[in-house]
Length: 535
Figure 1 (cartoon, rainbow, N blue to C red):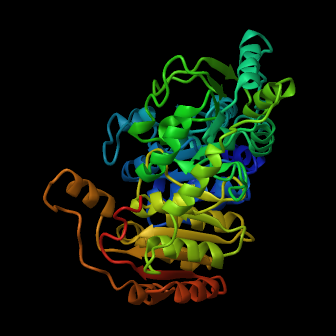
Figure 2: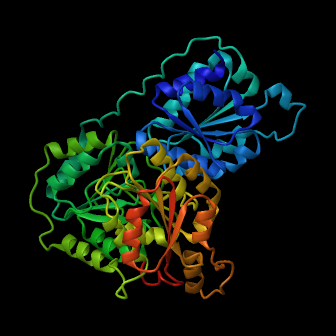
């Protein structure tokens, strides 16, 4: 048994079944060990795509994603997706190959310090050695999976990977259960505030999702009479078809016009695993420092975005149950303001009166696809509108890069999820520029025979940036581009493509897409400036 086998078997014991990346001479032993341990390696066309496919597999299975990158350019290519994992709280195990330290002293081809490059964007970076391999992998797993999840890096020299192991494989160290906050003055003050509140409101985010706190959140907001706003990653913590759900927030000025005044009227704000890393500037200091704000959090908050009067550290679910257990509940929001805001938001993001446009397309897709579809959406103007429109019944059914907000994520997120959970239907939503970033990995989807419908919004522009140029009275520079014949491209790459210009065609073609064992490009031509006044 080699040291590479120790690493692979410990990850397999954790439940990992998939790894993604591009081979290099320095990763051959690692890849062989992963396959031998039952962890299927999937070849992608770029390390960035590999990392997002790994994230998709995590959302589908709960086991951390695995990204394999070779020395030098492989590691450099992966920087973007590793930074995304850090900001978007994704447990990603990054395995990189490297030359042994003494060889690096005299052999410099492709050699740089992987750990130094990645240190600012990972929770920990380690150099594997045969003597401490069990401990190193355990430390990496624990870091990746606890607190706010995130990426960890293990650099594995070729000689170490290939060497005979000096120890047996030990089961991964137990991470333990999430701790409850201490029942004391902070809890009592929070209970008092909730009991006295006439207009409570809750804001929930990614930490509640990662704590699997959906049921606790739904029970809490119903019990205390609080409407719920979520970040985009928090969508589905409660069924968004229900009356207490006000939908997602964070990037839409149009939604902010309705939600921020409601928050200003609240006399008790409960933050439930809410990390404001997803939020735009107007969510900085949205309430005064002396407001009654209860922050339920698994980690110490150092963001400086806002103040909180009470902070409860620990399991989000356990904290909510402690708050709810003895709170005196009474009718809230006598004026019905949350109901009015919910109605106003529905009107603001209704389909276009003309019958066609991005909003009409998103509403039509929600009606056409299976109710349990896991949607992924790329960054851009379309993402803001889609995140406001798309209603989620459960957490992790709308996936995106909402902290780093990087393009090129939607298609690989959908593909990775589909590969890891073949029973779950997926849908990727991208702009034309975002799709062109990941065209090569349409071949990966084809080769894996994955049914992945991809709705492409075609407006021949980086619309969000173009809108900012106009708002600042700047000339149009570097944002518009000629159209690509995506239908012909789909056929050339072994998929299916169809032009879409109306909702009836979209509904019909969306249903047909799920019958194929490859990708389908649903090429929706919406025209330029289709998002004006819509986000």
